[in-house]
Length: 503
Image (cartoon, rainbow, N blue to C red; front, side):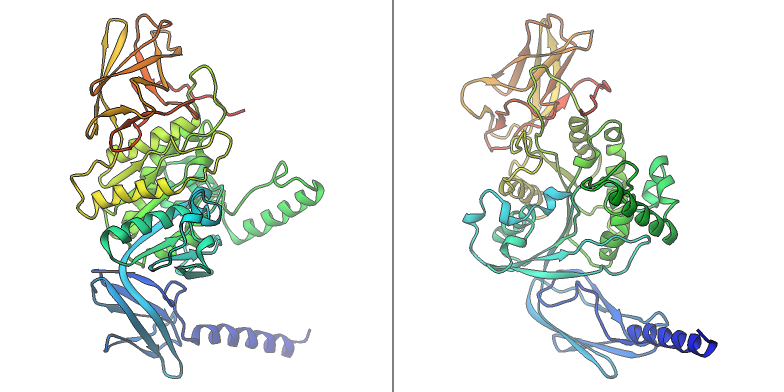
């Protein structure tokens, strides 16, 4: 190719880039049917030609801005109480955009793995959910990773809760949003940005991973050249191993590589105010030794996201992993149980973090339990208490308060007993308890209710030292609740690092 041809192609490419920047446009989340956070100033922004004056009109008021050299302009809309619909018109020198059916309400950011992404079309009670909810909406964020933090997602669209969209909604988010909307009577917006099979590291920023050497070493490798060469190598491995999804040597640089989901699907939303966050993840970190870092990583994720949203007490609602795995005769802790414990420990240590227990809702042979209705309702109960002032209601199951050895048994006292402890299937016997003596070997134990206390003993442990409740992947039976219908929180009194590797 001659020099003249090279110059022509270069000019065409430059013109294409400038034209793209010159186009008046908005981020995907500022679109028809959006829900904006009520009672909070909203920074509305977008792109246009550098130096171009842009006006934004809402509710009869105009807001003016000028695009900077990077083509970005922004205005600040005033805090607005719940309600709508509003029309927002954005006008440049030659173009205009009108966004319709905008409401102000409460917005929740929902993220995690496939159980968060689990759709209503597969949910156990979906046939009962046919009523349209015009003021409950979900922003579906399409999956796309990035090697550096982005301002915008690749694609997203607001979906109304109606027949045409219903089966494509996140089931957990739907039931949560519906409950809040019906209780409070305000519009609810859900930002659903999740990716199945993803470990917590990929949802975290590089800075929040600085104390984790292995993750940091991977982050330091991320360059365009590394991504290109890794994808090429992966393709060659698959060609050489037909039918094998992830052959030996395959490196998943999308949803299993540190920071990649964060960069493409989390960071873009820190400019969008939210009321709270729902986090449903942990399955991918439930193997030894990854499980031992989960508590520190979840703490780091919450701290980092709060800082980025500029709200140090932004409410977080964590879904504890459900029961899953083969039911075994002998009590045995696992990486799964370690993650469950880590999730609850974070909520004990951090302000305005709540962990919702669902180890009575799982399916031992299916990592994706179909009952998402009760998960969403328990999340909503927690949010109604923490955020909306429903303070006199019990929203959590029994939590161990004291464990006292009395002869050959443990006597356990609890908080959050509500109007009383109960064996849900009737009677006084409780299941999923285990005892160990000084040898640290755990045996199944008999547990019975004694008023608002539980007495635990085992013929195999005449001198008990440790007691556990439901501290295993898949307890045979869960029947320990309070009268308000919330299951007891799994616990242990030991600190043994005895999780077994998954076969």
